[in-house]
Structures are given as C-alpha cells and as structure tokens.
Amino acid sequence: MQHEITASLIDHLRAKTGMNVVWVFDGVKLPVVKPFITVEQMPSSESVVSKMRDAARSIYRFQVGLHTQSMTERTRKQDEIKRIFVFDTFDLLDTTQIPAPVIGSFCVDLTGITPISPESVSDTTNYHKVYFDIEIDVNYYG
Image (cartoon, rainbow, N blue to C red):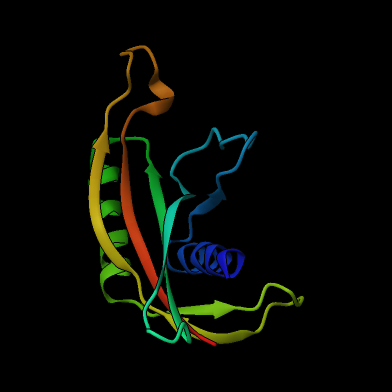
C-alpha cells in the first residue's frame, strides 16, 4: 500500500501543479531548476482496532516539500498546494500494473506547514522552501 499511496500522491501533485515532483529516497539527486516538489516517507503507525483482530489501521505520513525561486513564488504556490491537500480526493493507483489503473481513492489530512530557512546564507539552493506534513488514514479488514 505504501508504494501505491506514494505514487498516487506524486501523480496527483504533478497533474494539478504542472511541477516536477521528486520521490525522495537514499541517493536521489534533486533538480537544479525550481520550482519543484519533493515527496518523502515519514514514520507511519499501525494499530489493531477490533477485539477479534479482524480490523487494523495504518496512518501513512509524508513530508511534501515545495522548493521555489523566490518568496513570492513560494507563498503563492504554498496556497495552491495547501488547497490541494485540504479539498482534493486523490485517485489510488495500482502500481503493480503498467499503466497503473485507478483502484480507489483517498483523502489527505494536512497536519502542518513549516517554512524552512537554509542553515547558511550562502546556501542558495535551500532558499524559499516549505514543508507540508500530511497523513493518509487506511483501515484494513481481515
């Protein structure tokens, strides 16, 4: 499910914003040309929600980064992406098939928006970025 959700987030953000969206993993090279969006998996949580263990719950967490050229661009695109997370329904893609068919849908819970300044003033690559913390709540039934 993790792969399907991540791919679905990337596909939806790419289609809605027209920006390059990068899946962050060990060794990935980020684009030089801004603006772009990053999607990174964060720790998830698991729980059993019924006495007979016939239902379980996973909360998948992601950090979505917006990297822009200027503060003006960041604040405008930040509002655009925030509205996507608050109001859109995302298609769930079956990534075991090519092309990936839609097998369901999900909504995103936006839990935080954090602007990040670079550690060094000379680090212009990390200027004008903001991170969105999102969660996707999934219930499973045995």
